[in-house]
Image 1 (cartoon, protein in one colour):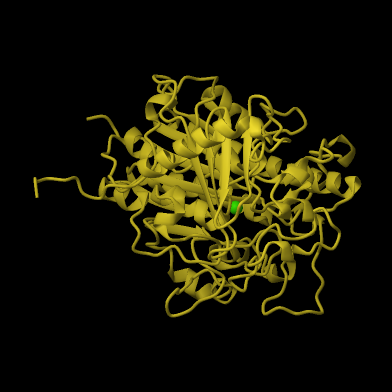
Image 2 (tube, rainbow, N blue to C red):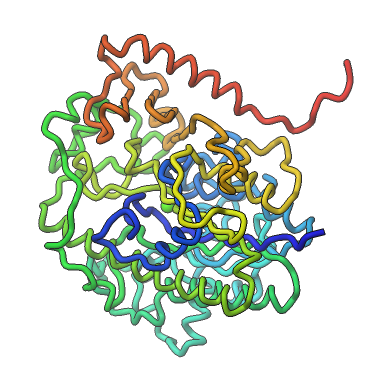
Length: 508
Ligand SMILES: [Ca+2]
């Protein structure tokens, strides 16, 4: 029986699909380029929910958020939902998570007990003794913060102390909050790069791979980088690696938002009033993206340069991880997958950061797969891929049966160059408020349609005629027939994604 392959999943957080050196000469990502040269790059890969926690929960469960129940951020992924790690452990795999988790909310209640609150993250004595098991990972090393956010701590803070940075807390916003301490803002961070969480994630990924090799066990390791997620702050030399004047931000085409659901256009106001969209605070918590997106070109370029610097910093660590695979002699028996949990706006359609705006910038993700001798090197594919397909495909790569509850598609033959495509659509959920901000998108090779719960508006784009998504055809009479047919196919896709926990085994 062949040795089971190691599975190394490397993700960034919120990396625009175009922020890859192989697609974009303005950014330097030599390690991600190396992966692409040695593997297959997918140019039509999508997240299945463009929000951190639900997307990450989908990556480890193979379930849509409507099924795994972590339906948005600030909601806990129930701990009884089966994960890919549970299955792989039963087949002899070591399962490890290093970096960002965000499976649990920033508050805790008896019903939704959370380890990922700022209070708990700062309780280092707890984390000295807790490394899992957690969500199918027998070993975890985590922190939750982005940049200098106060929800820092856990294994990352312990590591900083071990590295001699006893006053690590001075580099982060205080907890409990202290209104007299201003945020650092954007640009260069005084935290030295050798103590940055990106360095930590790379270093601890390598250390855990070494440990698993020494144990003689195949591993599933998720190396989960936090960047380039907001805030736009990073250690030098990365903060000044790129010049703002060399950046090429996205743009707003005059009039394009007039064709979109009304809340899109309101984002352009310096002091927006979203009351046109009742319920955007229905849960009592804000809706991501419901703020002013007005920003000067100069400021946008400055933020974009830092965003690219964060990606190049992470790329250096990915390069070290790939070198470690070579050094350990396991590159040939390791499936490496690189992706991101969702996309990001850098001026496209007049938008910045993220939100319930299902343009390609938000829902498409980079995806590169390498497995020497199995995945053809230096190839690209336009087949539709979803992050929900990762667990099913990992199991297929390991020769393990895929349980009927998993809703993703087995893409293994596509990854190995033996099939053109495994599925001709992707579904992207987004329920950000209990009922009020709830949309769902169905993407095909050519068309893409988005419906909103209890609303008359929607979106329909013809990506062949309008790849930039500037002309919403939802109300265009010329597209009425296509709209009707797409809605039928969308509903059929909804039927097809119903999972089967048990097969029918008797007549009654
Ligand atoms: Ca995210």
